[in-house]
Length: 316
Image (cartoon, rainbow, N blue to C red):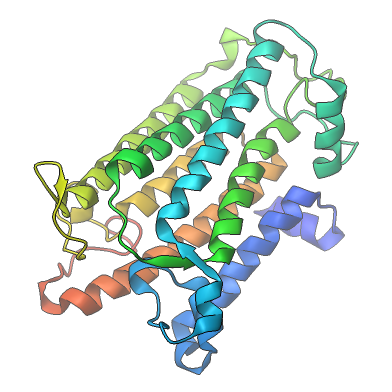
């Protein structure tokens, strides 16, 4: 966080860092306004932020309707990210396992995003592991949105749709931006996998990622089963979820998303660009968790468990 403040002070930021800084500031500022002054804000601004079950009822606003797409278009994020992460994994495999050099056009493209003075900040092993984990996450989310989740006719603002694609593009490319072999020659980090890089620390953080990865899928299953009987969709109503991490927080899938990116951040702890990705994810998941929590409390009132937190079990 201290490095982020220094970067902002000196304006020593690349394109991706500026993008995620803008998204983070936007979510913090607009989210804070909605949390405290929503009734005084224009409905168009509010609706550009809210979506799904806690969206405003603006059926008579033709202008806003033109700026919305079905929420089930979330699936498009994961079609796009699954393809892009697969390409990134293929490039890492060629570079770190087969020993091939990265195409100069790819390096030039990354230079546009991160500047020509980019340098490697993490080991090839850490990069390879993180790209694999991100690919695993993208494919699982693609499976969820295709075969598990039950989407109603709710809609989201086009800004969410655009930001979703920018997020996954930025997340995947930010890992490569400071990766050995994808920068100019580095004397500190080799472009080879090294078993000595697989420390107890890396194994522990990977285990944390996999725990959150599994719990997020389990939470998606719980939400899906609320609308199904013997595999058939019987309702689109929002019911009170129970079981798993839902016993502790209102939105465990959002909590798990933050843990997943925190795990990646810990593995790539020297990657300055990915730090901006993590701060964006954390601020976004926190704000959406608050909106979810307040919506659940409003809908279920006395039936809603008092001990259930908004974002972090037992704490917040």
